[in-house]
Length: 206
Image 1 (cartoon, rainbow, N blue to C red):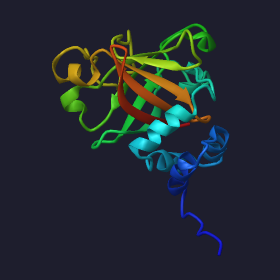
Image 2: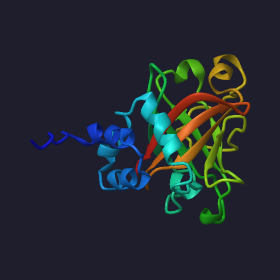
Image 3: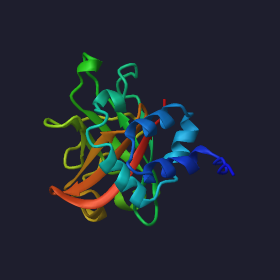
């Protein structure tokens, strides 16, 4: 008897990640062939264990650059939304909203600005960050210690990550992003260089 066909994209990505050995190219192809809505459903179906496995499984697979987060075709100070799923036990859905600062050469930009859009923002703050390419690996670092010098007018007021409850959530935090597909990245969080055992997936909205 043939196995039942899975009903939607959100049910199949965990299967690919849990299959052994993990095959990053299969996962990339699966995600690239789907619509934006299906990709978001897929990453939001992942468990914390799935996110961890995906992060480890794509190590060195697909280089990720600032261009992958904010394509050069996008105007400066224009928001690009990345829909996310994290491995926390609650409040697992969020977004990272990212833009390129004003620059003379979009393809030569050395950093991006962004913040976290999520339900606890009124309490924790927006979690502003600066994204840069890592010097020693084909990955992108999201640095919460650095703050943007400018941002789109419709973003929330700039707020330090080292005061109040923001310090507990974002203080001394740095995320590492690895490439999964053309739209999807997978990240791991560290504080003061120490891995927190917390992972998240992002899907860029075109």
